Length: 43
Image 1 (tube, helix red, strand yellow):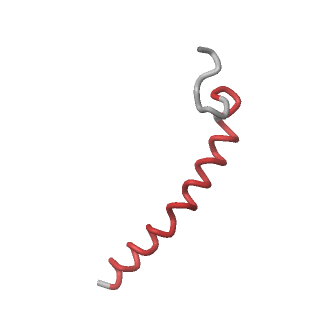
Image 2 (tube, one colour):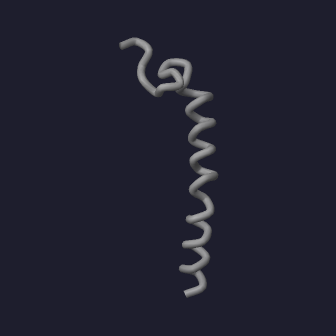
């Protein structure tokens, strides 16, 4: 039961961290072609 509780708490706290990492990854690798609006600049 403790392991399940620990896993639930760890996952609930990691959401904002993962979102920040995704934003940084997009800015570093994708934004040059897709722009800030996340739409292709070629269309």
